[in-house]
Image 1: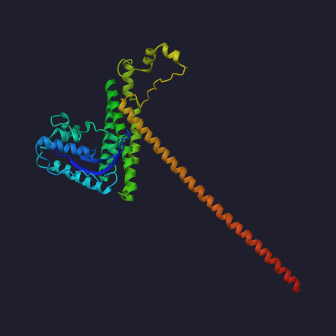
Image 2 (image 1 turned 90 degrees about the vertical axis):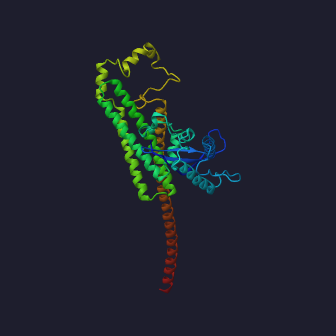
Image 3 (image 1 turned 60 degrees about the vertical axis):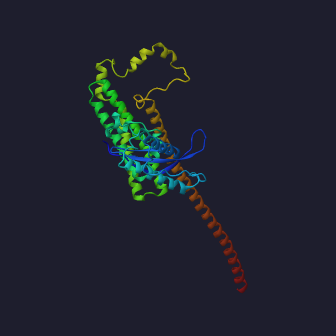
Length: 370
């Protein structure tokens, strides 16, 4: 039987729905399992529903009370209430998770609330715990990355994704069948897309911790170096993933393109004369051509890759903006220096006129004396 999950609620976040409805507070529940760590975001009403379901299912309320609902205060306007409720909800969840009585945490309501696999599911093993889906994964990981301890757990998960990508690429290069090579290459790209999403979440979380001064400058620099090394690893693996292995090329040539991905000649033969007629003409709404990065990804993978590329572009724009701001500061400093020098020259010029007048008066007096 798998050991119980370690549950904490280290932070909260404000969520604004896309339908312009009233914003609300989300509590970031961090679960540490034997092989990974992830975050589930829940609002207070979902905790209340869970409490009612557990009480009605078991017939006895959980070992710890649920923090009471307040009618005259809101967590949106009261940081003290938010912090008190966070501590209370964390104590409530940990009391259920650590209680010797397993009745509450063995219920489907509890496992569904935390996105845990069912007790009778084959994915209940620790080896497959990363296989089930987590709603709003990117937002949850971003919130989790703002906690110093969870940040390291997510960094470890990102390194495991890199290792998985390396194993898939090695399996692709050693494959003796074209279909196996294509499947391994697709798995490698999916692992890289997931690692790229985690890398972006870690960068945002580190910036938040740096602005909130939750870590010392030495630790901030160390973690920035970790992210820089991870960025280099991702770029190297993406280059390897975009290349076609020599074995796959030989297999494709030996099979005459009959298995695996269709060749460019096969595609041209399938399209026929329609492509030649459309060549040179502008086609509105035509799909964009596939690239080496998107050819083996599904729709979700392409969407994650697009978000990752947009985040990389945002980072480049931010770096360029910092350079431009620095250049502007230098230009303003030079302008102030020139103005100060001009004022000093004007003052010297004025004093020169005064001295010249005094010298003239002195010469006249000398002439009178002589």
